[in-house]
Amino acid sequence: MSDQIKHECGIALIRLLKPLEYYQQKYGTWQYGLQRLFLLMEKQHNRGQDGAGAVVLKIDQPSGKKYIYRRRSNGDNPIQEVINEINTPLNEARKQNPEKFNDPVWAKENLPFAGEVYLGHLRYGTFGNNNIEYCHPVMRENNWRSRNLALAGNFNLTNVDEIFALLEELGQHPKDFSDTVTILENVGHFLDDEVQLLFRQYKNEGLSNVEISERIETNLDVKKILERSSKKWDGGYVIGGIFGHGDAFVMRDPWGIRPAYYYHDDEIAVVASERPVIQTAINVRYRDVKELMPGHALIIKKNGEISDQIVSVPQERRSCSFERIYFSRGSDRDIYHERKQLGYLLAPTLLEKVNFDIDNTVFSYIPNTAETAYLGLMDGVRHEMLRHKCEAVLSESASGNLTRERLMEIVSHEPRFEKIPIKDVKMRTFITADSGRDNMVGHVYDVTYGIVKNLQDTLVVIDDSIVRGTTLKRSILRILDRLHPKRIIIVSSAPQIRYPDCYGIDMAKMGDFCAFAAAIELLKETGRQSVIDEVYKKCKEQQNLPKEDIVNCVKDIYRPFTAEEISAKIAKMLTPEDMVAEVDIVFQSIENLHKACPNDRGDWYFTGDYPTPGGNKVVNTAFINYIEGRNERAY
Image 1: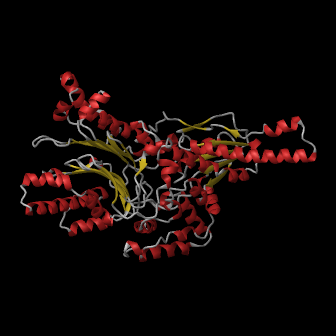
Image 2: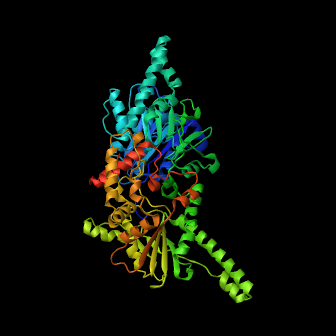
Image 3: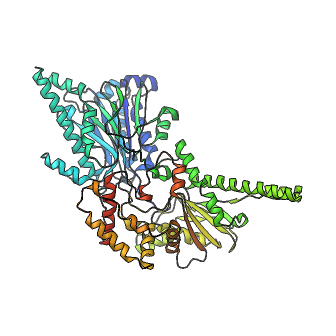
């Protein structure tokens, strides 16, 4: 993606199902679980660089012994900083007590991150700021083990105000207005409620307080707590949690918006935001890693019992297609093939755009995330070329003109695939003054010289998506123009991004989207200013309605124009004034997106069809903010 937007958060949960002595004996270290946690976090580095954190729980620690430890960082390299903070006391202990260090019993009693349950998190902030308090895992502490709660998640709620008001009605006084604190206190309330209910029940049975605590820890109904907590949540979420006595869970939203996968055997249970990181960290096959289905929770009891249970009624699956296009690691088998297919399906359109003039067309890509789509585009172009070669052979044969030389000429005719843009990973925009920074940003990309024929070739360059178009205008198009092509076609393997996301991706403001800006300009140029005014009026009229009654009025902004008209306007708006080459921009179609990603049909940022009622509220509010000049999030 040439325009960098913040990604989604990532989680990693590990539950060791055997005593630490087992891992010391089998793997040569009691740190087996901790090392797997580090690996899961590092392998999900793509999902969060604003902050990181990890928490460990030691099951059945005696009274007076600390049993929950947490480390968090919002520094420049948060994952490594968290790992260093965890490792530092361990390394000191190894130096001071080399013989005792490898004793799992001694380690659990004396070392901070020696435990059985781990929860890690990688943060990309889409709510609040980058304060350390916003870094997960977040905790709710209590002197009763069963009332302690640590949470970490990949989520955004569209109705924080509604849930916050419910907490106030319960008599709570939340310390912050954010989805993180709101969810923590929401789950915490129903945890307290369930513990109190069990306490009364066992008290009436005549049990002592010590016996009651043990019974509560054994019989706590995690499913019930999650069902009651999430009943009013509107948004996309995957949330992992640990209760202080040892129960753990990961739950997923009923539309499956945010991703989650898990694996377990008799040694370990693992949950992460992406499938291949589990395959790598645990060294298991694709088929052994299962998807946590929408509305389900993986619940791991203190005794090691594992169950996959429904905690909210599953809705129509609307898994985020941006995960497939860009966010998730391309090492996932399915995602790799889907990204290739996205490129493949663009081939017929692009060949028509260049009038099948293969001799004077060079195909390339924006490194590095568009590389897989580029491979698919290569396959698609070659397939179309093969069809044309077959037709040429049949035509020449029918006319009696097919000689050996002519056949060789036809079959050897190949498209030109080259690596043209090059991302300079060592380049740093080290000039802080705004006037200099824009100039330096223009040099993040470089190009391969001597490949493009001056004023003769068409240069086709594929990107995986175009959000703002800022980098295209300030950098990429200018650099490509140095090669003196006759024409440049920028291709997006994703459709036009027209609407804000409100479920975890940092795309929340209407004015940030080049497609929206193009539609607004077209309305003004064609004398349709009244459409803008009418949409604003409709959005304002719905402001105080229940979210369930709100409709997406912003669709009317795009309705008068075809996708091609908007693409042409985007190309005109993003073309620098001093460009010599003609510039076109081609976007993926919605139909081809669904062909390539048939199981993940969450497309609200392209279509405006939000899976939850809160989405319509957010898009209307975002439009109001745009018209009223408020540069703020709509949720």
